[in-house]
Image (cartoon, rainbow, N blue to C red):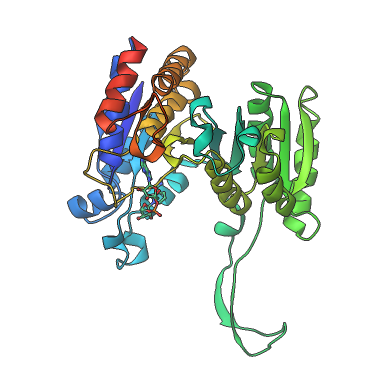
Length: 358
Ligand code: NAD
């Protein structure tokens, strides 16, 4: 089991160190190799995704990724900015399926801005198509308008497009994920307005015929955005395109109110995956030892489950995380001063997970 460890920038190295510590506690043998990515790689090699890092990632079963980015790189040319490393890995490795669970842990119900009864027990999975849609469609650019409301004016345009195989493969991923959960898929589209998403709806409906044990519902994206805050527990698996998924997965992850708790996975069709916390590099708290490492530790658990076929080890980590929360341990981002809770730092939280595993 070969794992490429890419800590990145900001709090990335601090939180990844804790996840590595947790992995090393398991009775499994991993070949883990670390390489620079993002701003750290730009400093070391002049590029956010150096050839050697990409080669390591491609030759590994999975990538454990911290986070990239810092405000100080905002003035660099776009291809040299840290965030390009993630886009490069997605593209080069064909990581088309993004999994973002939004789970509300019992002990953290109070961290959500929604009423406890709406959020207690929440366990939904957003599956976002990651390599197509308007984010990648060609042509795109600027030109002089030849028609429209203002012929002759300067305009910009992008192209929304999806091919049938692209929709089919993400639909299969969603139905298969639902089979292992609540057996319901909500496919989110904008079929009432967009040709691309009428096609999306038709193809998802066709693929559904192969999964009679799963219920399929279709929902327009504007309604889905409302339902996520009105009655989020009605969802099980949500599948959607790249742009709608970008927005809805952030909305869903914030339902729980604790960004430091949320893992994510991006997989290709050989089950190779990139596993990272949903949050960024948090430059505002980097180096202070107070970042919450749990999203990264839970990303390592997803890695064991989805890319390394080690479901029992994944369960062990997830149970240990629940146990440390039950013990009342909280990093500052999830600390609200309730009775029986103690504020801890990044390393203490990682140590507590390791202890809970044994
Ligand atoms: P962010 O997620 O880094 O931080 C938002 C807020 O959440 C900050 O106040 C931060 O302190 C807090 N936070 C985030 N993770 C935390 C954790 N584990 N524990 C405790 N608090 C945590 O988002 P941002 O501030 O908008 O972006 C910072 C940098 O991260 C930017 O350069 C951005 O481009 C980059 N970014 C990278 C990724 C990625 O690597 N996948 C994703 C999003 C943003």
